[in-house]
Length: 476
Image 1 (cartoon, rainbow, N blue to C red):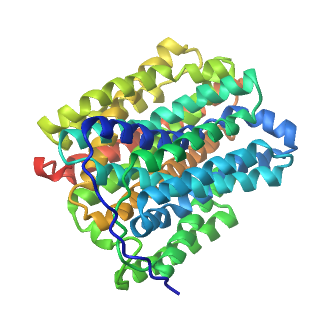
Image 2 (image 1 turned 45 degrees about the horizontal axis):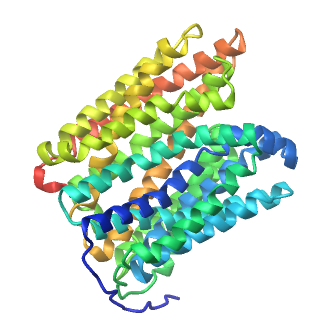
Image 3 (image 1 turned 90 degrees about the horizontal axis):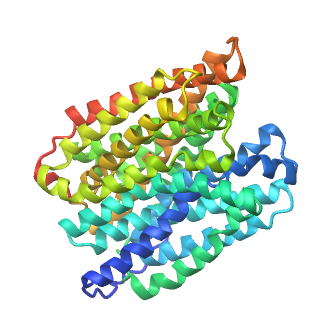
């Protein structure tokens, strides 16, 4: 049954530039928590396994429980913000995220930790679309919004890199529990600051699309689960095939429901614009190669170069710095050239980085084998994500900003999950009958995976070249 929401217009007051700076700081900090959490526990997994008695197979669910909840609930999280107010939704998500981080940090057994990680994913599903929708609704069109989107667009990649460093530091110097507990004080500060710095958005009269929420959430969850099973057991796994079949049926039903709903959770008209559809395809493909690269580069740095977890995290800092420097110039470049030249340049650099890694050999060191590709990835991502976000959110009606942001975040997260599962499958196929030392086998399999990553990046480049028109008036 659909439940009507209250139609209330929140008072809007113009923000002066200093106020907008504070708003951006609070919103980006909230989103940074989500980005950091995507990797902060990775380097702590061996310690978690030892302390809580996880099996080798069960340990992967420390990551998967979060992924399932986050990826499955993003569309619903975006629509909730449209109806009850995005600041309220963001505050609720931050409190849930911080509270579940506290529960996870205090966990005494595996089931407790997995439940906490699932709750973290639910909180993140409320946070991610609300942050992007608040930026779109708060910052006026033009240079200020371009600047805000540039900083926001780099946050996920920077957060993932910072998470590796922070996770290594906390695990080495204190305990794996602090990789979760660090979110508690940050979340408390953000939740305290939100009502004091961010103006609530109007609540748009409407009804929760219960049928769409059910089929969409279940379909996305089934799809994410199927990809997780593929990464663990291969494409022939019975549960993976069942997950894909279930996802196809549910998502077909979701499309049918949305085409008939008066107030859909995901308005299909969002895809009627050629540039926006191309942008959505781009944010699906871009992380598909990038997240997989992070995974294999982390393994290579620790198992081939024999770096400690802390040193492995610091090895990603050149990429982070390159990304951070690049995004500072993107808003001005976007105003001058439009989105398409930036996308073509950024995607081209990502293709080059993946092709470079494709040629990786066991004897290559950090400076000769990894540093160059990491710098290209940082610049390429910095040039690509913000123009894609701006293209997608251009001319979106305020009442649909949350839905548009939720779909963007959903495709971005699913893209990373899909890409990683494909690259892990390629790695497994290439190394199943390989001979040589463990370092040689890992490097050879990773190089094959990077080759497929190059093809994914090339597909994103072709979308930017032939689907997105790049007309100057088509971006935010």
